[in-house]
Length: 135
Image 1 (spheres, rainbow, N blue to C red):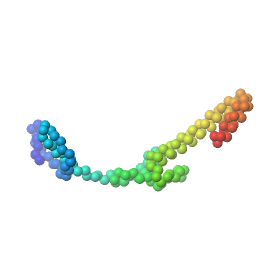
Image 2: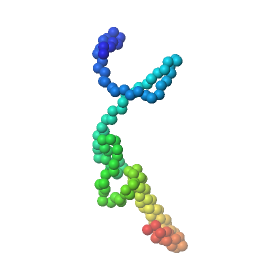
Image 3: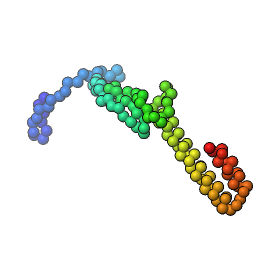
């Protein structure tokens, strides 16, 4: 197709597209309009083995995501119906619980040291009972 822009002529190579008619029609200034759109041509996606926040997964050519069976030695097995997001949340929750438990123990040890400095035997016994409950 021969075109020109501001006096410069050029050739345009148009890519042939298969057009599909749209079922609905419209009206513009009293005239009926028929619409068409290009038919969707699927483009294969690259497949990769990926990891997000410690969770390994595989992307396919259709764009689907499948979890990988590989796990690290310390990982807990997941449920068959568990999604990647649910597993990542569960792993993150377990890590947070571990950090929380460590912080509680540190804080309790500090309180126990302060109580021993004061010589408050009743508080020392109470804190030791708390320590047994945490462990």
